[in-house]
Length: 304
Ligand code: SF4
Image 1 (cartoon, rainbow, N blue to C red):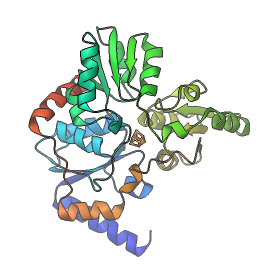
Image 2 (image 1 turned 45 degrees about the vertical axis):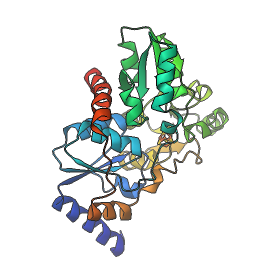
Image 3 (image 1 turned 120 degrees about the horizontal axis):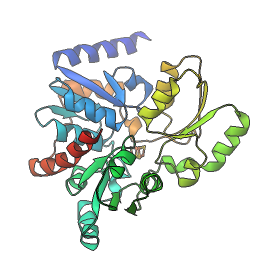
């Protein structure tokens, strides 16, 4: 580590102690951000961590809906998002108003909302899910007709696993749809021994070629198994940093170098420092919306 970097990291760590803050980072964050975090994980792990932390301040290194979820669960804490421009285009593909209209068209359907959605959309939903627990959440519902928002690919995957009648919102992740089946076919020829793991936000044709369909947290657990030595990884490339760090000696091959989420890369060590210094920008959800959204998130957390 260069002196300048070491100085920056020391400043962050000392401010973090002073402000009684915890740094949570998503698996897609830059390596430099993952390396200063107290916890690195997927949306489910991050929500569970936010719900139980004793810290006074949460510095959320991820995108806006994730910081909102932390604020929904912990209204008494200060939740900082080091760059307010870090949004999620998939979450922006649905609004509460459009969901209300859809609910009127399908009054008997249960609304399951992927955690990649705004607090307002969560507030209009019956239960949330993440990519780690979506199949379990939907399978456990006692209703057979479901409106699933906003990711059509995750929704389709869950439908194939549960057999439920699902009305899929036509949203998608612009990063994961860059991963194409021909990328995998080619890599399988180059690395015939490698296992293929993909995220359920990938296209259906990509999912069909995978050995395992997993959340990023699931991928990290999968990679730790002794018999797994070479893995073709179909998700945002930020996770490769963690996989390599936790599994030295194993080989991880990203399916596509193009699978980069520009929003996830907006957070840097400098911005984490500025955010702790200024105690801003803060993400807070209005109380009425928060209570309704929390009911949907809590229902999910009771399932897992
Ligand atoms: S990777 Fe996709 S779903 Fe995740 S934050 Fe980026 S755009 Fe949204």
